[in-house]
Every structure is written in structure tokens, then in C-alpha cells.
Image 1 (cartoon, rainbow, N blue to C red):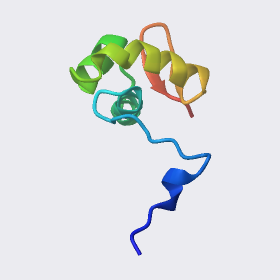
Image 2: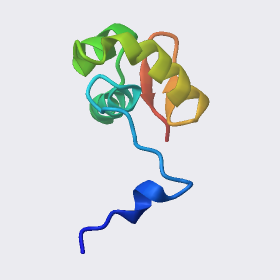
Image 3: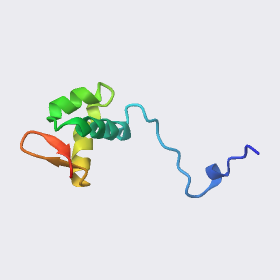
Image 4: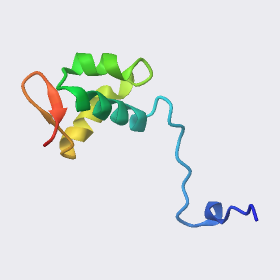
Length: 79
């Protein structure tokens, strides 16, 4: 009938815009690391200008959550 009842739910929360967000940056990092381990500088370049401000924060969170591992100079997907 076209009625959107989820907007009235007590648990409904509209997500912020995706472009330039931390969510977009995390996805870009994971896609880049699927190919090969990379340095933070290369990840920043591969993520693009829109994501560059969030690369450091996203990498720290991905390492803390166990999705990414860090060697002395490179980041890689966890096994």
C-alpha cells in the first residue's frame, strides 16, 4: 500500500549518507586488501580522495575487530 511503517518504529534510525563516510572507507580498504597486502600510503591512494580523511581511523578499527592484520609496514586481510 506504500505505507512505510519502519520510520515510526522505536528502533528505526536513518543511516547517514554513504559517500565519503567511514563505512565507504572500510569497504574500499577491504576491497583493496583482497588483492594484495598494502602500506597505509598505498591504501590511502587506492581508497580515493573522498575516503582519505578516514583511512587511519578505519584501519585501526579493522585491526581491532580482527578483519585486518598489520605487519611492520603493510596491512593484509586476516586469515
